[in-house]
Amino acid sequence: MKSFNVTAFGEPLQAMERPTPAPQGKEVLLKVRAAGVCHSDLHLSEGGYDLGQGKKLNVTDRGVKLPLTMGHEVAGEVAALGPDASGVNVGDVRLVFPWIGCGQCPACKRGTENLCRAPNCIGIHRPGGYADYVIVPDAKYLVEIAPLTPEQAAPFACSGLTAYSALKKVGPLLQQAPVAIIGVGGVGLMAVTLLKALDGAGAIAVDISETKREAALKAGAIATVDGKAPDAVAQLAASAPDGLLAVIDFVGSPQTAELGINAMARGGHYIAVGLYGGELHYPMPFFPMRALTIQGSYTGSLGELQELMSLARNGAIPDFPVHKHGMSEVNDVLASLRAGNIVGRSVVVPEMA
Image (cartoon, helix red, strand yellow):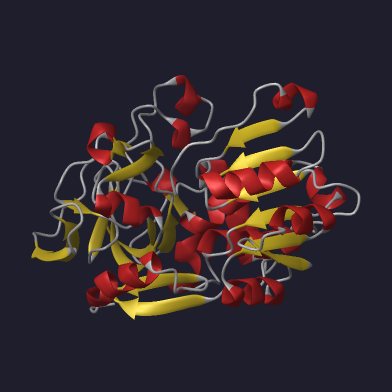
């Protein structure tokens, strides 16, 4: 089979030919039908995350080994089953939950494998979907997608799940007051779309790109703010007349964090999702004085993905822009993503599919 791999950090992915793996035990072999291209793949391919002040979190310190076949947003067709596998049949088309943990730690036992301290995630710690085939360790990680196509379903494994889990952390405020969505690229635009599907009070879309702000309005945002405007904080605060109480930051830079936190009313809830990098400086007394909640949100759980796909399968989520490319174009797609030129999500499809 053919796969596209990170062989050196900061270099283009390299095509490699490998034997098609045979599933063992409870494993399931999936023929890849579509693999989403995610912004976190840029960090993986570049080798780390910016921690500010010249510090970097290296992905090798988090268990990543080269060569790495990336691709954690995978939808595919069951091609073969291990001798102990059950729950699916050859020919079934499913979405893969990629955020796999050890299965034994407290986080895993709580049903939050995405928070496992010894993760074994597809496309990060084990081979992913930038390939003709991928091994899934257990059929329990496969989620029904019909009547969606693989191209429509693939982005839900990370983009959709990450947005959905972050929105759930806002709680009842979703229906009570507008939510500011900072960064309306792939994940942020998905959040705008999902907020409408969840009967939210409305999304205020913040982005430095006029094109992406326009896309957010089309997806249902009630207002937009240019994040680079000199008065962006005032604009954002004014966009929620009763006080801005929820901000979800899908960029995660010092500038966007400062913007979101400064625009919030007392009692506000800021959720950091994006991994752009850097560090936050904020006066400690203001946290209690303003009664602020600062919370991180990382992907989502298998249960949340099942909830999300139930909504999608039942037609509750409006169409979302998805751009299809051949797998051999993956380096070009990553370059476009790095340049900020993609509105919505992109998926790559093996030429054999």
